[in-house]
Structures are given as C-alpha cells and as structure tokens.
Length: 163
Image (tube, rainbow, N blue to C red; front, side, top):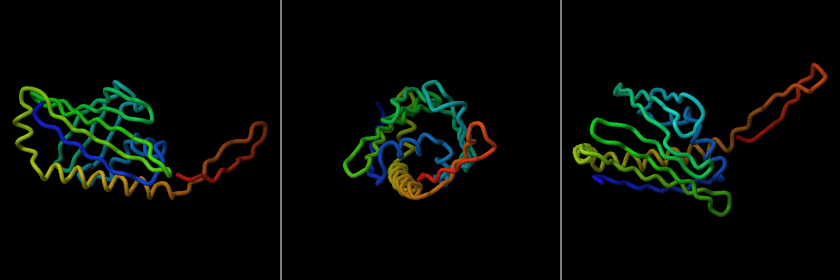
C-alpha cells in the first residue's frame, strides 16, 4: 500500500442522522471544491457517481460496499491506481457520532499519486470533515413540513419534523 490517511471527528448528532445526511450526496456540495455531484441510483453497492470539481474535472466513483447506518466504501479508479475512501459511523453516548474515514491509494502508480498529495491534502481532509460535522449539526436544527393526503378525503395533513 503506497499511502494511507485516517481521520476521525465527533459530531453532535445521532448516527442515524449522520448517516442520512452523508448518504444524501447533494450534501457533499458543502465542499467548496465541488460544483455538483450525481449518483446513478440509491446509495448502495454498485451505484456509480460523478463529481464535477472546480478544476474543472470530472471524478468518477463507485460505491463498493455499504453497511447501512454504519459505513460504506467508495472507490475512485485512477490510471494505475485506486483511491479508496472507507467511512465508519460509530455511535457514541449522548446522541453523538464519531465519523471515521480511512483513505488508501493502491496500485502500480499509487506511489506517484501519494507523492503529489502531501500534507496540504491531509489538512484539506481534516478541514472537510470538520465542515461536514458543522453542517450535520446545523441540519439537525432545521425544521421542515411534510405533507400527506388523508385517505378518503381531499384534505392534506401536515407534520412538523426536525431534520
């Protein structure tokens, strides 16, 4: 293995909320380097995604494993290497969650990519996880209304919920 980086951050939301927020890929736009992100279906193994960055560069990726509510692995194929992003969501006391991310580069050209990344990339991951936690906590406070038709009538019921 040419390169590995691990980062953990604690967030003041329960694991279910953290998982729901993170697996809604539109929330990844909180990263200022991302212009848009698309997923070709549900967040499940085999689903493929595309991200447009500000470089502008398209990044193609695939969800290779999912343990619903607990973690997932996303891989980005690169010429001669694979970048693997393994996420774990660890439940903590007091409705908190620890987000664990391990990034690895493997393959014949992994050493070359690792040499290009350096400490700035690692700091960017730290900063990105902190921003993710901040946005997760902020989203917990958002209230929204959901509507539903009452069977057998023309009435709509409203339900006030927390995000």
